[in-house]
Image (cartoon, rainbow, N blue to C red; front, side, top):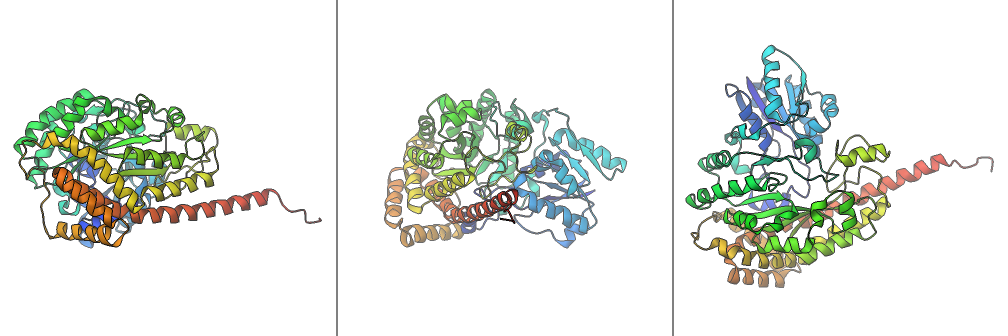
Amino acid sequence: MNILLLYPRFPTSFWSFDKTLELVNFKAQLPPLGLVTVAAILPQSWDYKLVDRNVREVTEAEWNWADLVIVSAMIVQRPDFIACIDAAKAHGKLVAVGGPYPTALPHEAEAAGADFLILDEGEITLPMFVEAVERGDRSGIFRSNGEKPDVSTTPIPRFDLLELDAYAEMSIQFSRGCPFQCEFCDIIVLYGRKPRTKTPEQLLAELQYLYDLGWRRSIFMVDDNFIGNKRNVKRLLAAMKPWMESHDYPSSFATEASVDLAQDPELMQMMVDCNFGTVFLGIETPDDDSLNLTRKFQNLRDPLTESVQSIAKAGLRVMAGFIIGFDGEKSGAGRRVAQFVEQTAIPTAMFSMLQALPDTALWHRLEKEGRLLGKSADANQVTLMNFVPTRPIEEIAEEYVEAFWTLYDPLTVLNRTFRHFLMLGEGQKKAYQGRSRSAGSPDINWVIIRALLIICWRQGVVRKTRWRFWGNLAVMLWHYPNVAANYLSVCAQAEHFLEFRKIVRQNIETQLQVYMESRDHAAAAESPVDVAA
C-alpha cells in the first residue's frame, strides 16, 4: 500500500515562533514525531510519504500516488485537520486519523468524514487497523480500552521521511505519562500516571540514526515530564554522556519537567553534562490557593522562586508556563504572574487563559456544574476561556492582555533574558571544561550571519533597547562566551513575542467585545420591555 501521512497546519501561537523562524529560513519549529513513529509501527512492506503542511502543500502527484491517507493532529490543529480530510475525500481517498485530537474528541473526527479512527496509543491500535485493512474493511474505530503499551518495544521512528532542513529542532521521546494529578492536564488522561520509558539503548539508537542522517541541531525531548521516572532518567543520562563525548556533543537538548527537578542537584548536573540546555516548567501560578485547588501539589513543596533559580544556576535555561482564570482566583492574578516572571528572570514565559480540555478532571467538574460553554476545545493563547469562570471574564481578559503586553515589552524581555543568562553562565562553566571549542556549536553560514545582523539592527539600533543590547552582549561575550550564542538565539525568539503580543491583544479584545454584546442581547431577551408602558 502507498500511505500518505499528513500533518495539519498550526495556527500562529506562542509556540509557532513565526518571526524567529523567518530569520533563519526554517519552515517549522518541530517535526511530527507521532507520524514518523506511526510509519515505523505500520508494516515496512508498505510505502510511505510524509507531508507536513507547516512546511509545504501536498502535490497532485502525491495525491494520485496514495492508496490511503493518515492524518494526526492536536486539538489546536483542528481547522486544518478538517481541511486535510476534505482534501483527501475530494481526491477519493480513504482517510485514517489518530493523535491527541481524535482521541479526545472522536465524534468530531468522525463527523469530519474520517473512515478509520486509530485512537489512543498506536502500538496497540495500529495493528488492529492493519488487520482491518487487510480484511478489506473500509471503516473502523480502534481503541485500547485502557491498556497502555510497553514503549520499550516501540521501533525507531522513520526520521528519514522528514524534510530535515525545514525544521529548527528535532523531536524524540523517552517516556510517556506523568505521576502527578493536575486537574486541568490531559496528559494523565491520554498516557496515564505511571511513566513508561524506553531503554537507554533504544534512545541511543534513535540518536545514532539522527546522527547518521546528518542531524546536528537542537533536539527537543518531547516527554511531558522528562523526570517522571527519575531512576530510569538517570540510567539514560549515564548512558548518554559517553555517547555525547564520543560524538563531540553534536546536539543540545531541551525538554519539559516538573518543578521538583530543583530538589535533585545530581539529576540537574547529569542533564547539563549531557548538553541539556533548556527545561520547560509548568509553574502555572504563584498563588498557592490556585495551585491547591488545581491539585498541582508538587509546586507547593518548595518556594517556587528558589526552585527556578536553583535550576538556572545549575546551568539549565528555564522556560515556563503560566495560566490565569482558576476558580476562586483573586483580582490581580495577571499582575502577580508578571511580577513573578520578573523576579525569577524567566526569559520565555508562556501565558494563557485556562482552558478545560476534554475528559480532564476539570472538564468533568465543570460539566457537572453546568459551566462548560461547549463540547469542544480550542486551547490557544488567543482565545477566551471555554467555560464560565468564578470572576468576571472581562476582568480576567483585561489582566491577561495587560500582563502579556508587559512581559514582552522589548526592554523588559531583554533585561530579563540577560539576568537569566548571568545565572546560566555560572552553571555551565564546569560543564564546558574539557570540551572542544567546536563541540555543539552551530554551523556559521550566511543565514546565521544575516539573522545576527537583523537582530543587532532591530534591538541594537532601531528600538529603545539599543544601549542595553550592546552592553548586555559585551558582558556575555567577555564573561560567558560559552552561552553567548544561546543568549543571542533567545534574543531572536523575542522577535516572535513582540509581534505575537499584538495578536493576543487584538484577538482577546475582539472576542471579549463579541462575548459582552451577545451577553447583553441575551439579558435583554430575558427582560422584554413592557410594550403597553
